[in-house]
Length: 260
Image (cartoon, rainbow, N blue to C red; front, side, top):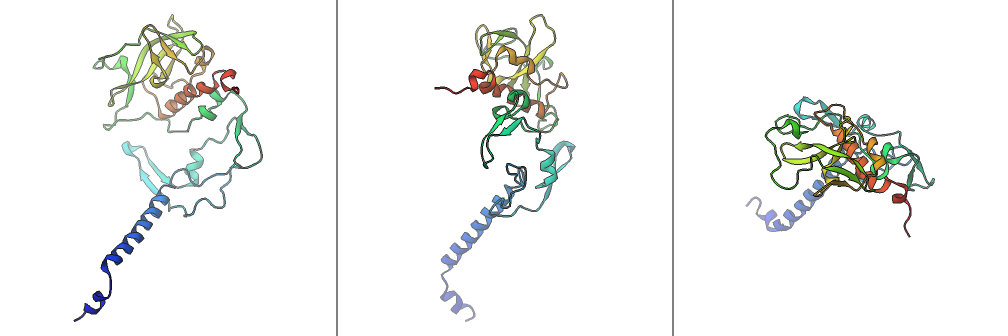
């Protein structure tokens, strides 16, 4: 009968196994190429595209429609990467050898390099699932209150050197997550309006004070400020978190010096 001879001499289980191997190999290659949509084309130490970026070629450009009418993004794209790359950095090569460390040439916290580096995210606020601004001041949210733990508002703020730098006057809340994301610190106890946001994750609320170990007294005035008083953009968040976290190493020369 037709087909009896063919199927009688073929191990269908082995054919299925080979087909699975081919499928799995194709899946790995596909996922690896899709993983190369952002961050590519690569750049070497001289800011040039290297000859061999990967074992697999870049995927074809694909355009993604952003939510909430925020336009489109096409990746991979050299134009996209150039528009989302920081090119003027306060760094200098320590050696001409490829892969050698880069060293700061100025104030790394202000220049945003090394552990204080930030990425040029979009200068727009993050939105929740309903298209509303996600992170907002608690003073504008009458439905929010402290349900447990210490309320830091009114407490003095001290840095890693023990100096009092101001006091907490407000908190910024991640509304859908119901979490405190930032503390608002007035740098003048008399209320001069010189306020700065500091990430809650870098702050320790104690019984009589709030301690931010990463910063010293002379670092606070240079914390990046906000463009408006009722919302924080993704770019502003990136710069604030990078600055404060970078102080763990760069707040003083002693912190970045060698330890024997």
